[in-house]
Length: 267
Length: 249
Image (cartoon, rainbow over all chains, first blue to last red; front, side, top):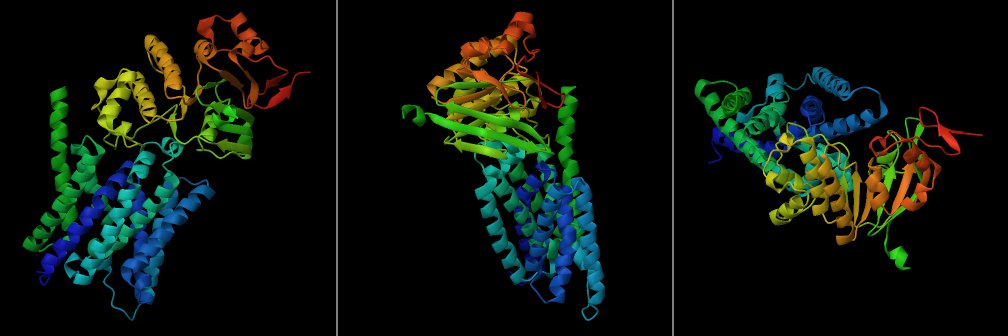
């Protein structure tokens, strides 16, 4: 069954959606969407470095994203600039460095579009293995630090006072975010990864009343978006990554309807 | 020796230094099992900072802290829960501990809000939320409980009931309690040890000994019980607006 490029795309995409669900919820709760953007922009630099030194792309992207994330945390402590300015600074400078480096790589034919928007239809069995293996590790770690992360998201002081060690889980969470970006860059592309993290979680927020419910809904919304998006792209011959995000957006609009009805009823 | 076994926290000349000034300094205190220690003092006098030092949220920049507490619970002064997070009271109760719904309901009953179990935490009133916060801390069965102005926004009758509850919890759980409070009536009637703070420890002791202190006499001689929060210190020193100490000669 892995022979078919479309089946491979479906399997890989579903895997990424499952990892993105819980992480996306945390990104929304912690208001880290721009942080995710910064990491994915810097991922571009990771890819060019991988090509330059013929490294494994996933590994290289993970390292660069992790370095940028830690750099950011450090800069925040040392400068008087606001978080969003620092994020912008890092996002655009790493993006620029990546693009400049691409200019040097004349010997390699470079698919810039593929890098920015991903090409899920090109995944091979090795990619799938990496997604599921990496995903399993990420979700397992997330499971173990969940209570600490979650309590720190609600209130850092409370979490710290009651022995949840939030500083440790925050650090690990940053690495996990870098991990999910590394796993999905090849398939979804640098520009759209944050979309796959955010939009399913945003859909879930509209229809959930508890954190657990939101995590499950986000995962399901992501999986549905991937499946429907891929079928749409096959049917009407559009690029796969953007199609997935467009489907997710449609789901988001639909998820607003129950809120709207509830609001009308309460009037 | 018996006294030592009951020791939960001991601060020896501790302080927190931030943005090139000392927020609090020279804090020495002990908290024992089954005893209530209260911090009083004007706004910005470092009550919350001292509490955070005891809870190990903030590091002390000088002096020594010994903390023997095995489980601490905290009722923070202010807590804002982001609207992006769907959170019911029952989820909030489980935030840092693994407890079942029965224990949760029991704790919520103590503070009179067991009917709110499945309510959205964002829709609670200020007083209801305070009651949930206190219930959550009690449900943890801590050996050190730190309450930072726990009854703010609670109605008058509820205030008395909650203070009585805090006193009861102290003996039933045999836990040490650090309380930050503006309610001097409760402080004086139910506390074992009072610490009067204004960037440093102005005076401290049993309520009985504090009563004899000049600050306290001024407090209760000049004002009646309803204006208790407006009190001044009359010690051997006074404070600049930023809290710096100047000696009265």
